[in-house]
Picture 1 (cartoon, rainbow, N blue to C red):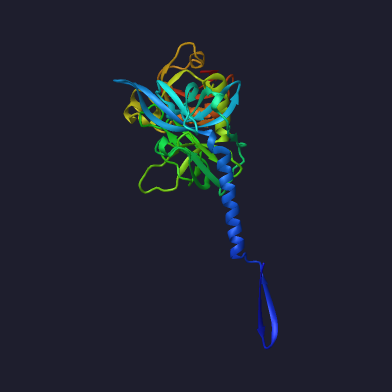
Picture 2: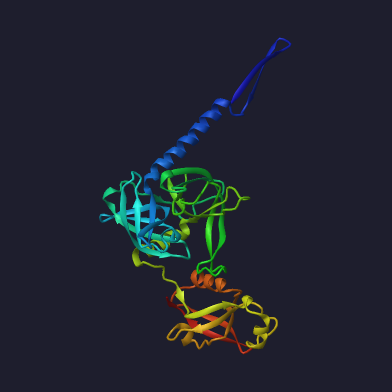
Length: 352
C-alpha cells in the first residue's frame, strides 16, 4: 500500500492506494527469478545429451545429437526418455551426462507415432532423476522452462523460459516418408525457445516437474515462439510400455490402406463402381492371411467408410480411432462398399 500526504488550506490530507510499489515489484521479480532458478537446478542434471552414431563408408560415424531426460533409476540401471527421431536408424547410442561422462545406451523401445523412445544406461554415474509431472495438471499461461542441448553438446544444459501457449494441439506427422500425414501427434504449445538439438529434452514447470518432452519446432522464417512438447498425459503410458515391453501394443486389423481421396475419380467410379457421393474413406489394398480382417471377410478393393458409425475420411482417421477409442479384443463394426454396394462387417481386433 502507498500513502501520500499533502496539505490543502492548512489541512493535512492523506490518500492511500493499493498500487504495488517499485520495491514490491522488485521483490516479486526476485521471487519469480528464484523459483525459475530453483526449478532448473532441480532438473538440469537429469537432462542429458544423446549421440546417434550410424554405419557409414568409414565405419561408425556420428549422425546427430539430441537431448533426453533421466526419469528413473532402479537396480543399478537408469532409464532415459527421448524422441524416436533422435535415435532413428542408430547403429549405436551414447548418453552424455551433465558432467560430460559418456555412457553406452541400450535401446529399450521406440514408437514413431508418439515420437518417443526409452534408453537404458548404467546408473553408477547418475545422481539426479527428473520428477515427471501429473497428467492434466497444466494450464495455458503457466511458466514453462525448456532444458536441452540446442545446436549440439557445446550448448549442453541450456534453459529457455516462456509460458504454455496452448493445449491439445494436433500436429500432422508423416511417418513413412510419402508426404502424406499418417498420424496426428497431440502436443503442448510453448513459446519457450526450442531449437534443433533440444528434441527429447524436458519442458518443466516452476516445481521442477517435467510436464512435457520437447519434440519439434516450426522452423519457418516468419514464425517465432512456437515450439511443441509431448504432454505427460500422452508420454507416461508410452514410456511404461516401451520400458516394459519394448513397444506400444495397439489394436490391429491386418490390412493395407490407401485414402480414397488420393484415387482418381475415374477409378472410383469405373473399376471400384463407387457411387458418386462416396468421396471419402479408405481402400483396402491387401488383406493379410490369418488376421482379424481376413476372419471378418474383408477383401481387396473393399472401401471402408465408417467404423462403429463414425465416418472415416482417411487412413489417419481410421488409425486414430483404433489407437485411441478401442482396445485389443474389442469388436468393431465396419461400413464397407464392395463393388458399389454397402455392407457391414464385424471385426474383432487383435494386437499387432
